[in-house]
Length: 287
Image (tube, rainbow, N blue to C red; front, side, top):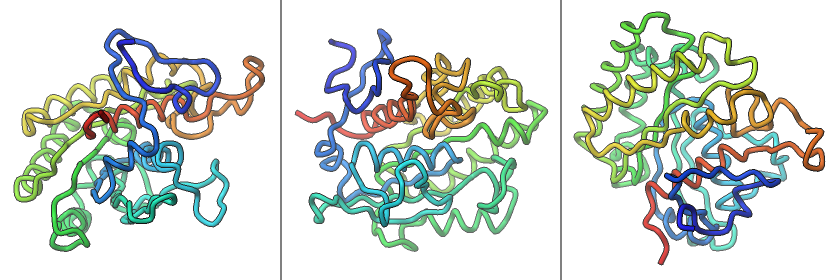
């Protein structure tokens, strides 16, 4: 108190807690999250980290079971998803979640990042997919949540080229969202690559600069944009692979077991924290 309220049992797995004087987010119980999200449409445009966000929101906050008894550690959301998920405890409650992968126009490929928007068919797909008149919903999404970075770090070796791609992306979404604005718009910055991934083309130093460019440009176009700073949250945990597989903090870490804390790896902790922060940014706090 007073930085973080609510039970920490769904946030921490074996004693680690992210504490910061600026930490003011609610730990959402399942019933509270369903009350906020039921009947709403969440639209995600992002990379594999966004797949993890949806998966971990469903599994660990909304307590949505993996389909057909799939193991919790192997279930993944498809890179192209448009689905209504019903509350298993109250079937009258449900949330629609849509995801369009932005690492490449082909969902089976990678490393084009924001240059995916150079592809005519990909732009048409986004227009069609977002436009409320072409979807099951008659209204705009409740929240538009997006991220980019890891694929951009591989794609762009020139900051000038990256700025051009960011300007193109901002103009593209400005044209779409002007006609059908969401109630909330959230930019989730790129994570800090961890372990050996710190030395890849998408490295923390490069992505810190790319994040700054992306945030500044989109905030200029969307003054009410909210920032979920995944880079800042993941940076304290990026020096090894105890919390991630290198590029994903929402999946089983590269170290499946630790020689500490009962030999249990700290799986999903960092991404789950970001999920709770995301909910706090788009949902009214419970009374």
